[in-house]
Image (cartoon, rainbow over all chains, first blue to last red; front, side, top):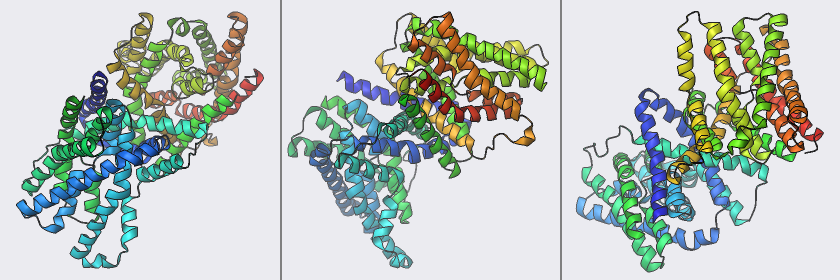
Length: 313
Length: 309
């Protein structure tokens, strides 16, 4: 219990450091985020993903945690779609982006430090990453592409596979895939190469937490009037229903206990990934619901994750 | 011997990534400034604090501190005299050149070299401490005196020195080390995490600064001075440290090796930052940093070979 709270406090202190930087250097906030974000996205986070995956125990990841992550995301997204369709009469073409926003989490950024410091193992975060990158993202992007074809007939001729691949392929995904190959084939990088990569990867966690803190500063969640019912429903699914689904699945279907169960629930309580907004913009879908759910869940998920760890430990 | 190579390889790999990223314009126009500020205000103070707080005060204040101090001062004075007699430069440029010849890159090369080549990161603490506490304030006040005409400068130098985050962090670390006190784990872990970002960010920043820099241009008429400063830095400085370690302080071969490697480190990058700020000796500062950072590898390998390490 004490270890968990301490881990949480460490994460919060670093986020607070980012918030404080944004507050005390208001003129530099824009410059810092335009310098820091690409550094994390192109360099330090890919290094971190590679190191984590290369050292991961793939058996445990694929055997237990990845199936839970998959089922949790699928169930939450589907339930949202049904509720939204039946009660809010949301047009079907808006459903996939909104459903993805309720169930696609920011495991790579905020998930890894929480897993590492609060849960004590990166396995849950790595498992969610694999599930999302290999199955969930391609599935949603297929739907996105089909809708976008209906709306814009001129994109009809673009081949489906390469379009989706192009959306998913980014430095983090590529590094994750290479790291997974290393782990699968039991390959080891020579120490000379491993050491600088590890150094860069370790730099990622404080940087991304600070960048996360900076991004919170001055934001007003739920300010947008448009599509309010869907936004509120989506936020509720993301921050409340998804962790509950994960708990039920982890506890009763997979029989997990203590720290493992907590890891699964905390990962399900993570905020929505920025990628969802990016994907919906790439396929020219309406970005309102993803944008608002990302923003609101970013604020709400930390207290929810804290509450979940409190209840479970 | 392999440790030195490994240390330098990692360093150049990350510098190379920074160079490549800047070539691709990934960080935007202010990327280098942001990385430098991040290290200067946040990451490096964290690193200095954790390093010095965890070090044994006997070690940090022991004979290695005196070796680093005496050898650096001798080289500093030597370059000042050479510059005055042969190159006939202004007082400000003399001081920048002397700093370039005698100040080692304790932060982003000293710490990893200490870790990979010598096996203990705290071995870089004595030289870092000397440079932070004595060398930097003294030479900065010399720069202030050489470039300002007003008497009011003195107070501002003192205030600026005392409000330097790295000096504050070093002093706090030293206090922790002397009183055998460590902050609770809750506070220490975030500091350690931030400290971990320091070396990569500095190295990436250096890599960015290499884009478009052409060293040793004939038109600048500073080539001889750059080579003189580089020779003092990479050859005379370590030899002095060796002599002091072997004959004055009578250290064993490991102690001598540590003294040499820490003195043979390339010129510190913040010399360039200082030259830029005072608008004096920019060429000699930038070129000496670059030349010593490249030649530092073979020189250190040669010293390692000489001492059979």
